[in-house]
Amino acid sequence: MATKITPFAISALLVVLSGSASAAPEGIASVYEDSFLVGTAIKSSDLTGNLPAKNSLPCSEFNALTAENAMKWQHIQPAPGQFNFAMADQLIALAQQCGARVIGHTLLWHQQTPAWVFEDEQGNPVSREVLLVRLREHIHTLVGRYKGKVYGWDVVNEALNEDGSLRDTPWRRILGDDFYVHAFRFAKEADPEAQLYYNDFNMYKPAKVAGAVKLVKQLGDAGIKVDAVGMQAHYSLFYPSLSDIEQSMKTLRNAGVRIAITELDISVLPLPDDAFSGADITQSFAAHPVYDPYVEGLPATQQHQLAELYQQLFALFLKYADSVDRVTFWGTTDADSWRNNWPIRGRTDHPLLFDRNGRPKAAYEAITRHID
Ligand code: G3I
Image (cartoon, helix red, strand yellow):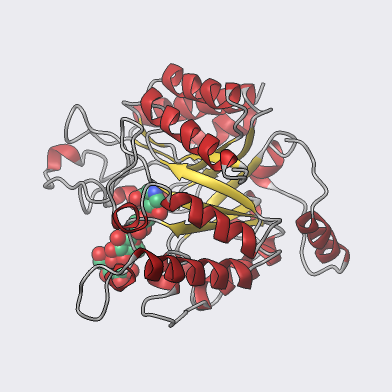
C-alpha cells in the first residue's frame, strides 16, 4: 500500500509522539503491514462499559476498526434530531488506544434505517427535498463530528442488485437514480480528507462488480472520487470460487478502482439451499440439526479446509496488494460472528480466525506463517 502523508497520518503521528497510543501494529496486522491494513469489526457490547484492553485481540491483532453496528442510522439517529454518539465515541477512543484507524460504517443503507426517515407525520412518503435535507443533516452531523478521526467511510452500502442494476429502495424511490451521488457529496463536504467507499456483498459476481464500476464512474463524472470499492467477502467453504474473486479484483484494478476487503468471514456450515449466497439480512431459513453439525467444535478436516481457504485468499490479496488497501474481518472470535444467526438463527458457525475462547485457529496460523 502506498504511504500517503495525509492530515490523518500527521494527527496519528502526533498521537504516537505524545505517547498516548501505540501505533506499532502487532499480530496479524504486523505480518501484512507492508501490503495492506488488517482490520476487524467491533461489536456494540465492546463499546458500552469498559473498552477492550490494550492486550485484547481487537487491539493487539488489528490496525483498522469498524463498528459492526454502532454507526448505523438506527443507532446514531433513532429519532428525528436525536443523535446518540456514545458507542461511536467509544470506537474512536478504542482506536486511539490501539493505534488503529477507524472505518465508519455506514452512511446510506436501505437496512437499519428507521422508518421515520422516509415518512412524514402521517406516515406518507416524504418529498425528495425533505429526504435530501434529512440525509444531509445526518451525514454532516456524523461525518463532521468525527472529521479527522475517521479514516474512511462506507458511504453507500448495498445499493446494487445481483445483476448490477440499482436496487429498489426508499432512497432510490424518493431521491431518484442519483441518490448515491448526494450521499457521497455530503460526506465529501463534511470531511474532504476522509476516504469514501462504496461497499457491497457478492462482488465476486461479474455483473455486480460491473455495476459497482459503473457507479464509481458516474460518481467520477459528478466530480467525486471513490477511494475504494468494498468487497464485503461473506464467503463459505462452498462458494465462491477463488477464480471468480480474482476476476472481480482484476475488473476493479483494470478500471483503476482500489479495493478494500471489508467484511471477511467464511462460514463452514451446510448451505440451506444450493443457490444460496450473499449477505442479505432479510433472507432466513428454518433451523434443523442437519444444518448445524459442528455444535461441539469444528472437526480437524473442516478446520484444515478453512485454514487452506484463508491461506489461498490471503495469497490472492497479496497478489493484488498494489490495489488492495485493507482486509477487514467481520468480527474477531467465532462466538461473536453474525453468521451464527444468519441465514438460520442459533447455529454454531466457525467462520473467523479465533475460536470461542479467543484462541488462534489453524486459519490464523496459516495466514500468519505462509505469506509468500
Ligand atoms: O442488540 C439486540 C439484542 O438486544 C436483541 O436481543 C437481539 C434479538 O434479535 O437483537 C440484537 O440486535 C441485533 C444486532 O445485530 C446485534 O447483534 C439485531 O437484531 C440484528 O439485526 C443485528 O444484525 C446485524 C446486521 O448487520 C443488521 O444490522 C449484524 O450484527 C451485523 O453483523 C450485520 O452486518 C452487516 C453489515 O452491516 C453490512 N453487510 C452485511 C453484514 C451482515 O449482514
